[in-house]
Image (cartoon, rainbow, N blue to C red; front, side, top):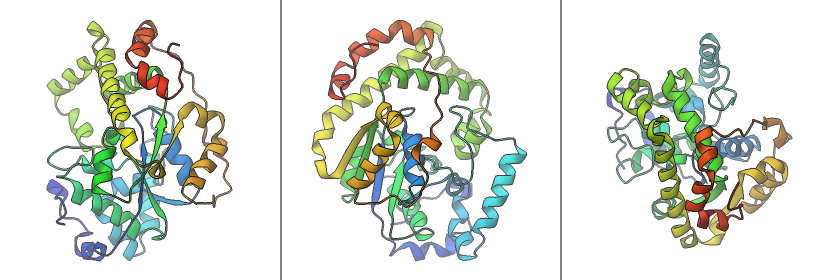
Length: 330
């Protein structure tokens, strides 16, 4: 398939090497969960097991030169330079969740998809060739015998399409109580819109350019504000849509193709849950790193507007809460 062009970034160092990808095969394993539901933690834990290839911050920021750096044996040097840039910019963590930043931090492939002219951060027919290129690039420069672990919350309500396009795909679903997801999403949106997050801007082109468009930025801030309950209403509506999609479609997947865990259970018993997932895929943990070393407890304080409306949110998502054995109220 012909690779999507990335606008002005299309002329990149990897261009001469793209024919090398034609015979590269991969078996994708998707972490499927809403934003702020624990997908990053799970991605980090599974990547630390050394059982998977994965997409990193380095892969996203230096996407146009990945094969070139690999073939020229320059990858380590470029990562060191990227690490120095993080240090120069005083980028220690992602700010929105205190996750430490490094070139090897597992990140979302949606940041690359979002660079196309269609501005779609999830997998579609239009950008599927680019998605294949992403996967083949990562597999080409990594251990080709490993499964390819992928994460992109924008694809939470897209897993049936993914399965149709990639019949070999397997899924790891992660869920978190939606009241806390909504609370965290509101905090994240307001933090990202209040002032530009430099690390997020390095990964996400549309977000970087948003701060060059004052009117559009104003509208975004309004949509996630406390005015008229706008932010809570918009995020709750999106939560209902995505959870409804999950409930309608989860039984269409063969049970041999997916495993589900809850974020709360992962935090309480991280090592056993990681082992459960690895066992599902017939894998054995290669790293001696224990899962708890990546866990940093954070307060679960609810925003006043979320606390006030928590019962209403639970009522609207009753079927989803029941399916996952969550309490129907906080």
